[in-house]
Image 1 (cartoon, helix red, strand yellow):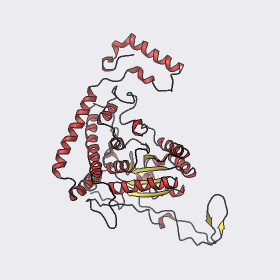
Image 2 (cartoon, one colour):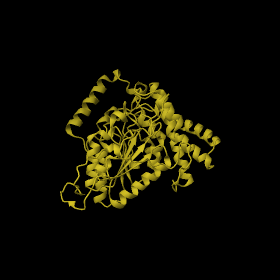
Image 3 (cartoon, one colour):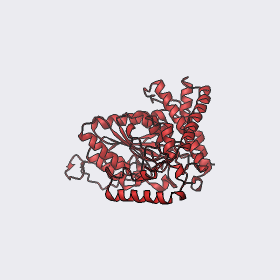
Image 4 (cartoon, rainbow, N blue to C red):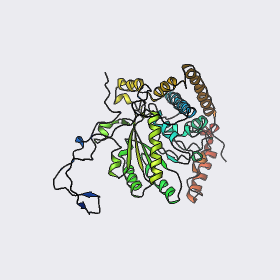
Length: 423
């Protein structure tokens, strides 16, 4: 029988900030730190320090806890947040099944992390530029990315705005102020800091938000980016989805410290840890972090504690490294979608009848967009050479013509009828 740890998807360790070290009032003048002298040799033991607490508003049944306050989210916006979370969940199931059937080549779900993604997206402004990792299609949906756009990208049709040149789930939406997804772990994080620095020197009243997982937080890019954001005072939100697993590596093997949030302290950054399955806590926390970043022109690290219910991707079988009982426990006991549904029903903002009707509506819309994309032709093969550079270089032009000549000569050996004609 699976028994959950006391904390969400993370090792219960201690924070390396001690108030027990004897101190004097004489300040040390070394340029590398801001501190005072002590006449006692004391080693700080992080296991003696309390862990960073996890902020929440509602419990697993959707009830408000203690002194927590529900944010001032208008009822219509709150219902829309739920609708987007439910849509995302249903879309994930259908596209996962379609990959298993061989109809698309690859997919990654957001199962169990819907509140972390939609809650964050709803707390940001459209003027805020977002750099996602690869599990944040909910940000796209929240900002108006259509189901047709999702399906055209996953099927790599000629209507895909990246011209079919990216593998599935690698979306791009310049019009929605979201940067293109990249497979390479954590490369988006320093890019986000650079973008935030540009906003700062141009006096733009906006933050840059970048998403990444706790596994990606081990990449050197993340550490370099945090240090750069801190020393340059860049208004950047580092939003970490700590979902318990970096592919097959659990957090117990991934790090020994108190999660990811504590790392911000070493870089002189503000940080907060949030129950990522509580959409109210996520919304409140990200919105407050955004306000801090703008007011002080500073970076803020937000750690969202959640659980990855799905496999890492369709290339992964998570039963090889975790039990079915563990997955079922989280799916049953702390579904972000189910938690918000209970809350809305208790406030008479939702009902079982509305749920049944919306489930049918979602499936119809998803399958309609799915069918349209599946029947579309693929992109013109020559489009692969477009946009490599601002203007085509001689070697790109030469390669394009070589492919054209090859296809014109040997086209009968390829299913060119499934693609747009050569131009």
